[in-house]
Image (cartoon, rainbow, N blue to C red; front, side):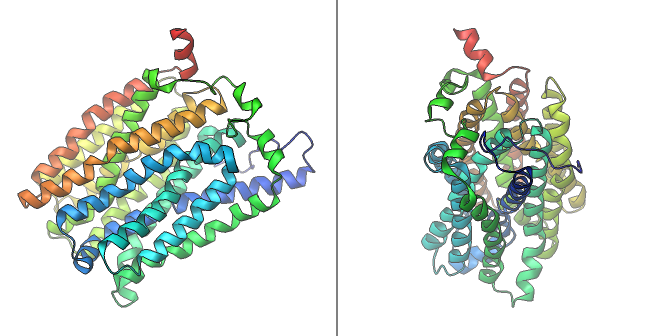
Length: 428
């Protein structure tokens, strides 16, 4: 990791002193890291305690499958709204609202007396995660244009750390608090509340007109943004955009199946609840170093296809192991799944690389993540249905492996050295 802090795009032509710029940069980096730490604990903490939540709220396997499908549904629906909200209020204010929503949702669902209220509170938290998901690559592209790989790696590494940490400590922490799953889930609201602080500071010191001038790509409704090459792109006609959305959606399918069901797979194979949580933590922890390395590696390559294929093959090997020897090789399968799940930071990096303009990245990020998450919705639900009706994990695991084949094909196509602006020129 570089020791020198990257310099952001100035907030306005009349930026104050260099000291103010450095302070703002540090606050922005802190905000990115803390936001990323909070983008998955609401999901992986639930995965670690899914059996207890199902019992406490009297959920069937199908209902639990619906619950594990809620994250991508919320990400798709609210992801579409993120660019418009950013144009209206500014990206910093939207991320701030996202952190507040995560805090409120995670806290409130610990008081839920039934499945409907639990789902509603979870949806509130996931709404905050959704808008932040879309805007993180945008903020990186606008404020750190010469460090996209490095800053995406830092953000992705923090996201993986939060994901792994929640998976690892939720079960033992719940046990230490008396075994109440409500406390085990609700405690993560504290981490989300901490993430509110740097974004609140950035919003309070921001001059609205200066931010519009600093981030024309986010303020796409302004005249300056309309002049950017990516502002008027029709992504529905872009093969690169669709292939990137398919790649993103299929990797998200695998990720949410893993976060929602993998601890249960291990527990049904005879692994204890605490060890199953640690195995999920290991899967997510693999992303801590790799999420920093892979984006930097990808940013130096003209074609990211070889990385896509290598990650997919790791996943196929892991699923084969889970099918034939889930408990005996559990730690090895967890390592391989963790490597395969690093398709997420790779997809984020490719979003930044497949457009030459900030406005293009805004549109491509929203398009890719929203359509991608829509595509990922059926996967966790299908796993729950198959699990309930077959009573085992053979068919669900085969389904998980099957998803990796089109994922590798779509990712290889999306990894070609071209931009959405290039495609628009070729059509014209």
